[in-house]
Structure formats: structure tokens, C-alpha cells
Image 1 (cartoon, rainbow, N blue to C red):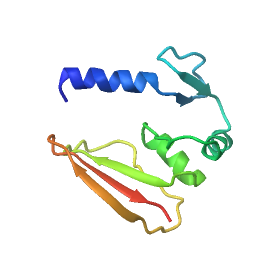
Image 2: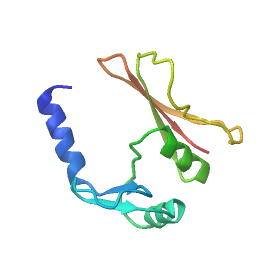
Image 3: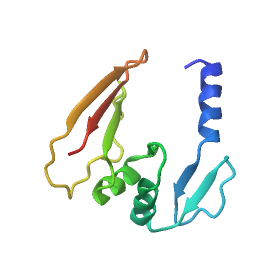
Image 4: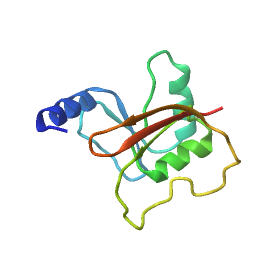
Length: 121
């Protein structure tokens, strides 16, 4: 990504409404942020029931696991990067019933990364 494109992406992300799920953070100063200290499932179900556009989770494996286990994820996009790190948090840490996902798309990037998208149910 070029610096100009990165700046445009940052401006778009700064402008959209964002939720931060945290039990320790009290303030956030990066445009349109609301901190949710608890009740993740209730908050997301309320938002999903409201009119509007899709929601996107940008985060790590911990919050992704929480969302998946709560059953509130309709579509799953996995960014596979051509890097072997040898460690890290597993995305699917266990406690799930076997579930077949429906392939939606595969979008490659110049970096060699591929964005794989699957639908649940």
C-alpha cells in the first residue's frame, strides 16, 4: 500500500463508527469510538437488529473467538499472510461444534497475502 493510499484508508476508518470492547480502557480519542465494557453479545445483537450497513470486526484471535463462540458472526474473512511466525494465538482455540462453511471468495494481494471469505450456515 502506498503512503497516500494508507492515509486514505486511515481517514475512512477514522470517520466510521467504532466499538472498542475493553474492560480496562476508559477513553479513546480516535474519532467516533464508543467503549463497550461488557455485554458484548447483547450490544452486538442490538446493533444487528438496527437498520444500517454491515459490521466488520478488526481485531485479533481473542476477540474473534469471542464473537464466533457467541454465534454472532455471519461471515468469516481470513487474511492469510505469507509469513511463518512460529507462535501466536490460535484463531480456533476449541469449544466449537463442527461446522461447514460456504466459500464466498478469495482475493489475492500483491504482497502474496490472500483474503479468504466464507459464509456461516
